[in-house]
Length: 145
Image 1 (cartoon, helix red, strand yellow):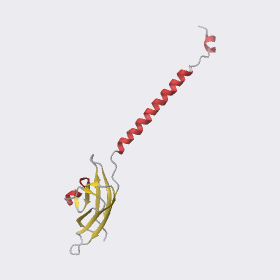
Image 2 (cartoon, one colour; image 1 turned 60 degrees about the vertical axis):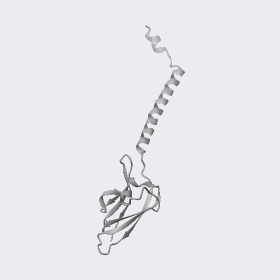
Image 3 (cartoon, rainbow, N blue to C red; image 1 turned 180 degrees about the vertical axis):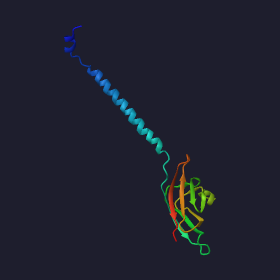
Image 4 (cartoon, rainbow, N blue to C red; image 1 turned 90 degrees about the vertical axis):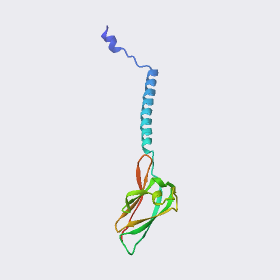
């Protein structure tokens, strides 16, 4: 073997092979990015509904620690009553909207619910829970005398 000839030889990779390598790298890169983006889409699954509630407190003159609050669905998405829980000192365990109001199957704009037992400094929350167990507080109200 002639070392001079070996060092002076200048062979290059064919342009076709270079193009194939560039296409392969592009395809692999696109697959990795696509998997990452689609993987994030699975986590977004159940978005909490958009709904606005108003709260109207009515004091109990005979027992100030036992007032009532009227919760009204003002605007936004219609909600399944079984997925809406009222939580707070009114009911520490939380009860779904349709348990407190037995006629409710859906909570639409204008739907009202009256709960009692709210005293000074106590908070009531309207909580939505999805089918897979994720929950979000849609609105909260704290009564301050």
